[in-house]
Image (cartoon, one colour):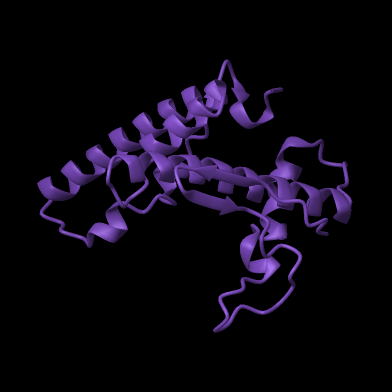
Length: 171
């Protein structure tokens, strides 16, 4: 599902075209064109996230999943582009969580930014505790394993405020 509507932003000589290859449908290869399916989040993951919010007996149409898939992919590109601009201005090459929070706030998503900052703080605390426990026990695992963002400790602590998931809140 693609209507070839894209957003072009020109910031200080940097041009972003988030939907440049969306309608191309051409396999990625030597010509540098990216397939639409490689540009979007997997539809199964999008559907799974959507189902978490809905009642158990609710169904989601394919069209709704595809629409949401394009929206979230566009949103991620938009926020990441803003964070990348910040890094570029500061002559850095790596976008980090703080850059994403700042980009969200800059783009007017202060509510999301605040929630993400709290989550990022909690995540870093847990990573620090886990690292110090590993050092104290003499267990020197690979850095990649100790900083895996999909660890069970982080997954088991969803972002909640007043008992309501931040995802389920109205905008």
